[in-house]
Image 1 (cartoon, rainbow, N blue to C red):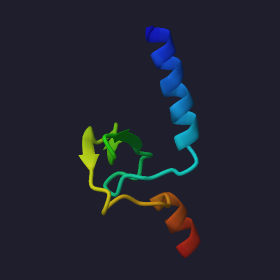
Image 2 (image 1 turned 180 degrees about the vertical axis):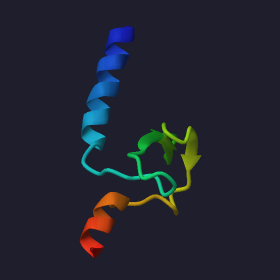
Image 3 (image 1 turned 135 degrees about the vertical axis):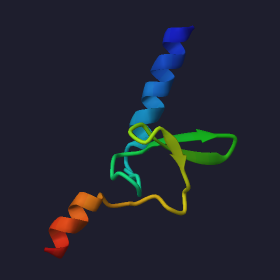
Image 4 (image 1 turned 120 degrees about the vertical axis):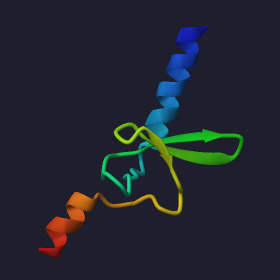
Length: 68
């Protein structure tokens, strides 16, 4: 049963990978968790949850390249 849950989680992760969000503090990719109709964003580097109002849709590194 654990394998089935793992496979289901992996399949769900692949589906959700179409949109990538970045941490507003460090610029790393965020993990998106969905449960009970709400979304949470977690940064592994900072080790904390991030507000959906603050997350970035483009990497801050990409923004620096564009502006130069």
